[in-house]
Length: 197
Image (cartoon, rainbow, N blue to C red; front, side):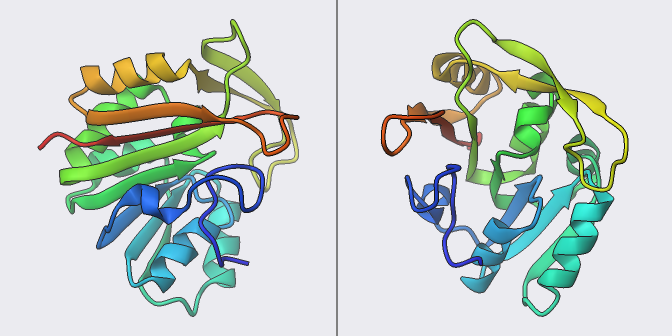
């Protein structure tokens, strides 16, 4: 199903695609199965999904092959943004690559790849109190792997994310935690900013 754009892990909870404004071209960093990218493409927005997992890219490409204006690319986010030459009106990540990429490397590249005044937005789990900065994560989380993999996830408070974005030239930053729908479970960190003008 790709009938709604979901930032949170709870279906129907929180805002949707309106967070991105009205882009003509969008870049999804870490789309996994591609539901949000498909939702945007079906609204007439040319959307590219870039994922580190070849298995995820293959699956998403097969599932959504008949969706016009949609492309999935197998690449690491920093590598893709380093070589990209066409600006995007919106760059976003839903529990994806922003969580797993050093913001000091990623944020300047996102800023460079945004059209003037474009939107950068991302969501991930709210941080555990005191567990800030790069945190190791273990598991077979990357599709197609047989052995465990250890990766880093970057976790900060909303204010720390806002400060990082401002330091890299982003403006109109809004960073908050959406509480879980019934007050139980993890909230969702949601961050939105505009790129340099």
